[in-house]
Length: 418
Ligand code: GLY
Image: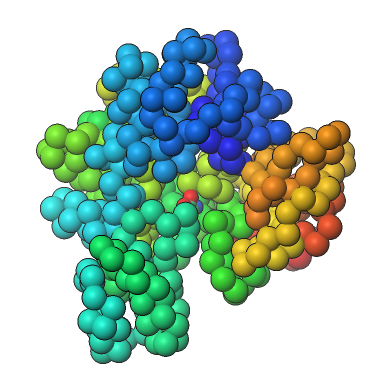
């Protein structure tokens, strides 16, 4: 496993549940992954170093968590080294690595998405924004570690963001029409030809309750989505995931790995907001908490082109909720190095590590998003109550979290948590 966040921690938890898995290693990992796997130091963006380590530990399968190594060609190098790798080639990872590439693929595949224009000149971009209706959506073309998207109704702020993106020579900004409607994240397991959708999830990107404040890497998530019509997943599979996988295969850059569609459920049907080329964080924590099918076998089937031979995915009944506990000052200027303690947890609650490290005998914060407290319940209300009980067991000076994760999706009636 390559990566060091809560996503990788939850992938390892699911892999550890697979009876066919005999040993797990994680590079570089975190104190949470160390409980499940051997943590090994590694520059995961260095393809040659990844291949050498994978050979050293005699890995049967390398799973790449984040996008940066994928865009850097790590999966290509591992496969060329004769080791199975879950994750797309650098060419296929461009679906996340370049917003304008993703738009071209969608146009070719007939997939519905926001109308967009690409700009290389700041003045032209601002002129276009001035004539466009609010709210404004401006994206940096390349990978930007979650800081590459601006959405807001303030024209001056949108213009400033576009100027920032276009300050560097050769950079590209994409201005899109705003898509109205609730957002859905749907993960598709892909083997280059076949795509199998997982459970739909929703994440919460703004730092504050009721979607206020700046964007973050994600403050919480829940799955499945009780408000989403039953046929929606099949529709997204038919209208979005399969056409994109077909188009990537037609281009001779087949997509093998996890295709993450971020969608807006508009009044005229699903439209794509973005694609990612890897599992999303924090949605992975809730989707995998509900997965009953052994994960390693599934990921291996993606690498060997045999996904179509797998039985349908099996899911636990009920729901999962995760709440991210963030450091003081996150996202603008997180305060790091504070002691983190976790008291006794209710059953069916897992504390997944994101930004933690061990300092002497203590666990301390080392990133803005520190922990992802994940719970499974018989229903959404129970999962949510348990997740917030788990959050109450965490002690971290100055920490903050959203109190409204999954609240709007609860069945009508008195809520027992804020
Ligand atoms: N959930 C957002 C992301 O993983 O990029």
